[in-house]
Length: 266
Image (cartoon, rainbow, N blue to C red):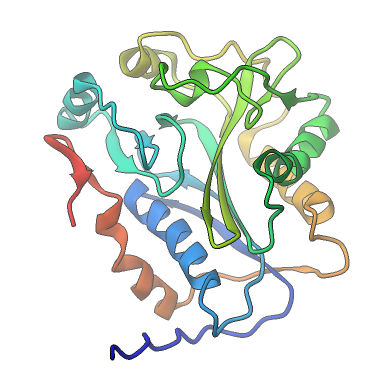
């Protein structure tokens, strides 16, 4: 019989966990999110919600976990050093991470109905944008496998402006009733690189009335008040520990893609 893996000892801090913002390469960011969900599934720990915002150290194209269509010119752009390629643990289609803000939410007791989970997991985003005078609503386009880019359509998982421009695209990964939700919040998408990647212009977004850093603070406050499990239990800001970083580092290869072979390296 194989012995169970030793329980990773992390500091026992009451409340919901907010991980300070990190700017790292894509495979490490993906490994963090995957490990957070994996750790929450361990029956020897008391799972609690985790939220984090992050940015990417260089332009990166993340592909949905089940996305089979890999465009050859994406590999050429990666080979020329214009972007990196990574595989997300969550689903959905390709997302260009450049001049945007990404969030990851771990929700151990999410509603089992997917649409309800999206609605409740995105309400804090709607509330945050409403606070700066920019109302958002859910998209209504049917999900399709024809488009290769996440922002090419707006489904019920996405948030759009009244003009129809998509501001936030989200994707999920479910494991035994626990949810990892990823979301890309566009701030000022680079038009030239967007054209090179997707062959079209980025969404014609209304200009934000505040900076990206200020937006992050607004959304953090909104999350503290409007996420379904917020309120009675305070959020605790807590960095990843050395032990957690070690466990995360062991998983990075699962999400790193090479330009000449769009599959994980290990």
